[in-house]
Image (tube, rainbow, N blue to C red; front, side, top):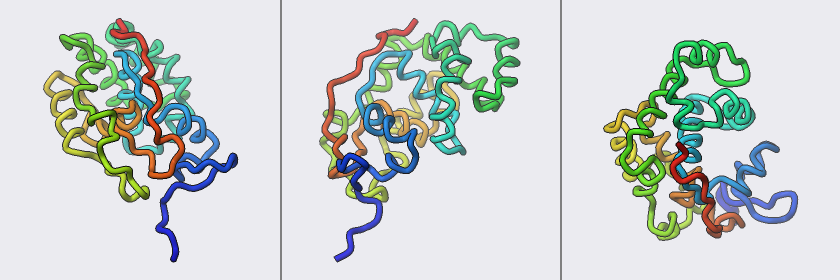
Length: 208
């Protein structure tokens, strides 16, 4: 009997992985060490939310390859620093070939930094309030890539809450991609070695 396509496959070390984690060299470390691992802290969440917004309409591989350039361009995604960006910074960013030069997305990151600073309990607390029980382990493990949703009712609610607080470029798909990247849900496939939840990664609680 032929197994369905999109199941976990062995990598160069023999361990089973989600197949996308083996589709490009840059994906291997991201899949193994970061994607789906719990991340907390306003600055860390803000970076991932911003990068997912930039990814909209593009390949995530493009964003991953430019990630260090994004960090340099956006002051390490420090909320206060980005919130203070003005017209000169926007012009600088739009002339930076190392990032994605999209005016709407650049402006969205600045707008979102200001919105995040205004949140009473911080961005991290707001985002994590939409986590599945035990960071997603209560849901059945997806067996193939086709079982992984693009958005969920929780991401729709998170998106609506972010928009309510003035965030932009944070639709349900972007919200869900952020939830996946930050470990609010565990979408590693059944059989993938990285599915076992690791210890949380704590990063600068407020990021101000």
